[in-house]
Image (cartoon, rainbow, N blue to C red; front, side, top):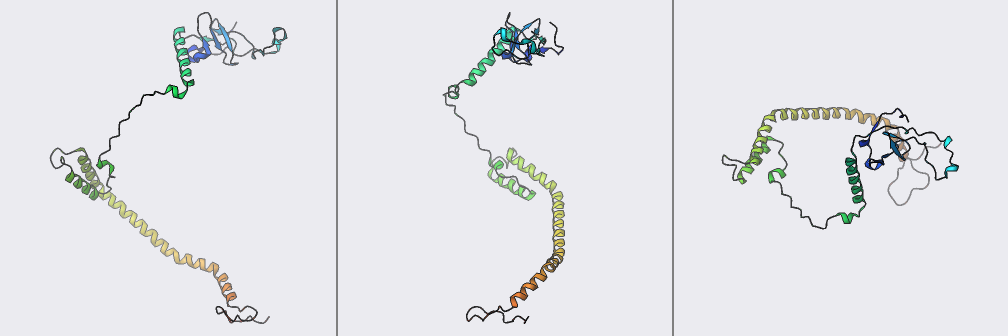
Length: 241
């Protein structure tokens, strides 16, 4: 039997349950028709594309069933039967453990969890955003920390001091940024103030005719007698048609 011309498949690339490397029983699942086929001369034996449907041999019409393209597929046995058996056993054990009831897999021993250590107060308080605030926080820390007034110091005190130094160095740039943002905001406010009268005038011109018509209708006296009680009504009578 000749091979099908495809590149050989490695036996190690097969899943352990899709190939059998036991001595004298070498077989593999055909990659095309997904059925078990024997392996001879390092090739999958020739077979039909469709497996038989349980019909007796004298009723099978095998001449009209094409040959499976997986026939003659070469297999490179790059793994020993012992290693394959170990991989197969691990797969079987893993599937058995997954099929077990979740309560049976869980241990009944109580695992005590240690309580989390609270972070220091200096890390809980949000970091100051200005040099003055950083200096204030550093002084407040030194008043409460026994190690900071001396030469030893502490980690939190050193962190606050470094923060103050960095913010003090960045303060001129921050000041320029604030001034620039202030000027932009003032320019936007002046622009809106200049545009507001023109916009209000345009809006008023668009509705002035409707407003005048409504005022004219309110000034007209309805037909009929004047009510004896109630709020005063307009006294201007309609002109005779």
